[in-house]
Amino acid sequence: MNKTKLIFAGLGAFGVFAFIVLGVIAVLMHESFSVLNSFVGELGKYPSGYLGFSPALLFNIGLVVSGLLTMAFFVGYGLKKESVIETAFSFFGILTGALVAAQGVFTLNNVSAHYIFTTILFASAFITGAIYVVTSLLPGSFGKASLAGLLTAFAAAAAGAVFAVFVQIGNMPYILGVPFTIRIKVIPFAIVEWAALLLLFAFIGLLCVKMILSALKEEDTGEKDGLKVKKPSFSFKKKKQESNLDF
View 1 (tube, rainbow, N blue to C red):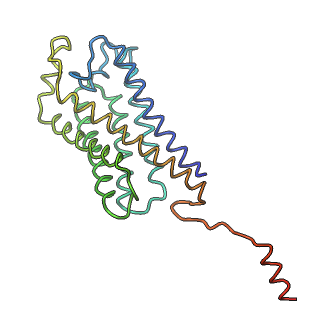
View 2 (view 1 turned 90 degrees about the horizontal axis):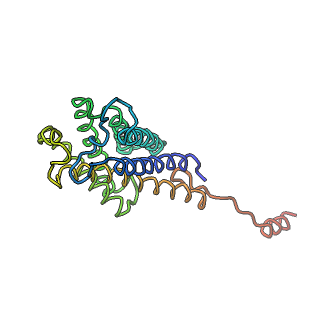
View 3 (view 1 turned 90 degrees about the vertical axis):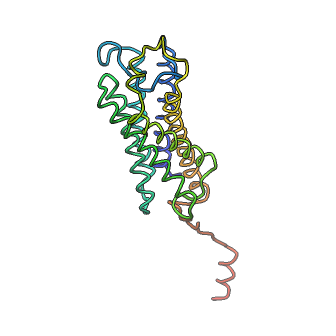
């Protein structure tokens, strides 16, 4: 059993779990928040004091924990990878995790910093997903990728790119100035942002499953780091015959 792979995959899976659970709790605790017309950063905006107990605090804890665990997962994913493209994939995965954690620190209480980190986060998510899709379609780097992994990576990359552009050229500041209670019921770009983040974590979850299966396969077949280890076999009968011939 490759325990190292299992540990890193477990950290990544727990990061996905932490984001989903704390995110759902924060949404349910918020009186007027809706993912249909409210942006991710608004759920993490402190209503009064910074770090005061609120749905925002729970959500930001979820972002920081999941972001740090995502970083750890991609560190493990990149171990013993020799190709440049796989190293780049791991690097942007680590960067994406760091930027997810930054979302929980640089909240909308600090608007200018939040915009910067949000743009870079979704740009990094786009690059990470794009690298996976492009290289998976070519012989070599990632081996045989599942259809679910390819589609999720593509969707996460596309949604991330769209929202990164929207943050820079859209009318997000105007929307944020409108109270929840009088907004239109559906804001498409708010849905795009939530979709991009959820698809990103879905993609990470699929990578965790792939790593777990790889670790278990190594135990069953004697593979280690992609190389098959031939197990020694002994034949007592053959050795006895050879002994008779010798003497």
